[in-house]
Image 1 (cartoon, rainbow, N blue to C red):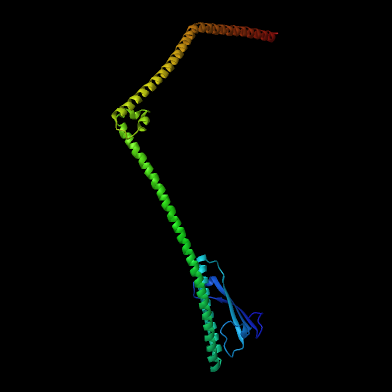
Image 2 (tube, rainbow, N blue to C red):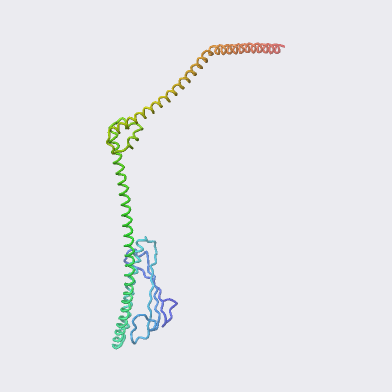
Length: 306
């Protein structure tokens, strides 16, 4: 019993419920807070029973408290099972209290209570039906609007899809026509296979594919061969000029090489004389150094004798 309890007005009970015989019973407990408050008949929202002037409001608050850490999945299952059991227990308690209150009444009060309860239930049912009907009408209108909106979107998407298909078909038809034209031109060019490897084949392929006149075809071939001959002649002239320049450069290099070879023996003689002169100078310097060493040695000997 809590310290907030006031006899005849409010009763407050705080309780802890421990479990046994269930999985993870040592991991949690249930904290229960029960409050019974005295109220008047005007504050009662349930069916008023005739002849009953004193009422009480029964409230219960429960929560699951954990002693140990529990996995999230198990915690959810434990809480659902616990709250479901607590709701069932308190529904049974409320029904038992109501039966007890009715059992303590007289027969006339019970009949009056049943009549009042039936009338209240009828009023409640009629209100619920009217509200449900209005809600259903509103829901039907909303559904109709959503359906019409969906139909509009569907029609628009179908029109756009049809336009896209038409554009794709036109593009495909144009490509097929182009391939047919190229095929006819290739067939026409097969009369002279040698032209297929020349850069002038494009002129033949771009000619009129519907022309069947052999004279026109061979005239075109003649013009192409003449153009090809002129192009080859220009290339040969260009190559000849490059070869002439290369020949001149080689002749100049050959003449310079002969000059170098002619001057090379004289240069070798000069180099040999310079090397010999250098060797002679080194020999002379070596002899001079030997003479100085001998003189120094004699001087040292004379000093040692004196």
